[in-house]
Amino acid sequence: MSFVSLLLTLLPIVIILCLLIVWKQPADVSGIIGWLAISLIALFAFQTSIEVILRSTAAGFIRSFSVSLIVAMSLLQMAYMEKTGALRRIIIFIKTIACENRAVQIMMINIGFGTLMVAVGATPVSLLPPILVAMGYSTYVAIALPAIGYDALCTYALLGAPIVVFVDVANGFLGKGNEITLSQAGMVFFMFLPIVSTLIGVCMLWIVGKWDALREGWLPCLVTGAVIGVVSSITNRYDNLVVLTGVLCGLAVIAAMVIYLRVTGKKLIDRSRLTKEELAYEQSYPLWRALSPWVILVLLILALNVPKDVFNFLYRELRLPINGLTANGAPLETRALWQAYTWILASILLSLPFIRPSGAQVRESLNVWLKRAPRPVFSAAIFFAIGEIMNMAGYSMETKGFAVPSMVKVLADYSALFFSDAYGMVVAFIGLFGGFITGSEASTIAMFGKYTLATARNLNMDTYGLILIMAGLAFGGGLASVISPAKLQNAAASIDKLGAENQVIRVAFVFSLLLTLVTSLFVLLFLWLRFL
Image 1 (spheres, rainbow, N blue to C red):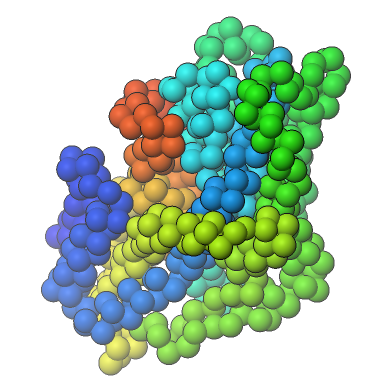
Image 2: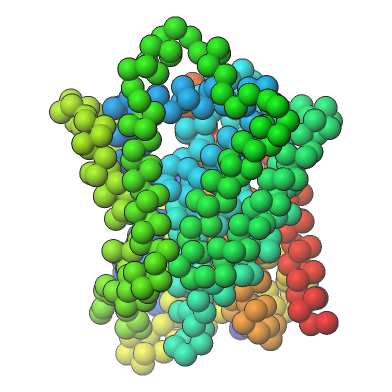
């Protein structure tokens, strides 16, 4: 095992980091340059043929479908709802909620509604900042809260795309006969949710009003964390409910805050805050009609996952694999009729009779989508390709084996040697780093998942330990949302305040480090409890 191999493996990651931080390049540009760098190093330093590199790139793009195509379809849905006026009607409604209790309002909108929206494919960093500004929050708060609010449940974003990616990566690593299920992963992942979601609530209250806000809002914050803990402990016991965790936790938090308002005698809806124009629009556009795409999507997802027979057929039997593409011959299971991207598109089509868009609105929606979608979709996919090349570097098509240790093995061997038993303490920070680079928890898992699993295996961890270590990586990747330049810029752009995100990122960086430290301590605690 050569130290030069380690340096060459790390070089593309350093290049991507410099492109993002030093030269301020967007994620798609940084990704393609990183892909070129890692391909050249694989070719010349790891004896990898061009065929293996190209096959790995194609396989990475296909593996990314559970994220990249969901991004594409969710952006289409958002453009459609924006251009048909549905989004404006929803924003008007949210402005009226819980105006007498800011803490409840924050928990309900940024954790409850934010988690629900990101779970079904919407983007809180685009949707919520204009609403928060309209409700009287400062620019700084309106950018920061949506970026941090759903972080605890980021693993269950996009209808569980990150945890689905993890299970696929883990099963590819563990091999046939040793596969893990969604519920096995979920029963480890969920243990982090109550404490992390509570601490995220604390961070949001601090951002809004520091000690005064904490004194006023500590109880709604604790209730939110407890509700998420209870609901997630139930959903993660069953394979068919794991991917619904974000949806059901979001709905449960909203319901809990409604009950809290009723118990404390506060108004749920206050329409006095609406302008004359908003009141007129409210009367002309029924809320049920505006919500129809999301309601249809949630109903479809429930119908496909709650009945076990339907879930087993679509997820376990109808895998719709693509064969003959990967270098090692492994099939690429798409599960296209189970994946959320198919049903996001279906929800758009099925809502047409309710939304009743004009031809001009349909054309405008498509034009906006074609303008917005390509770059974030490519950004999501390119890091999967980079991860696949790292996994397959050194593989020989002739011998059907590795001629030299892969980049992943080099990283894993040195990490096990250097960190040893302290690896559980640093893995969440590796995830934070990966999430900052890729802008996505699922992409972090795709890029660093096999490396993390291989390191844990080198440290003689059992299956539970492997999942726990991966949970640390995943949560670190999710917590990077609050410091992701792309997401913060997206939030700032949605209220025409580009540049204001720089003020947010300084404070958010401290919060992300503290939350990642807590995650790391919990990884160590759970590992220690396991071996008592």
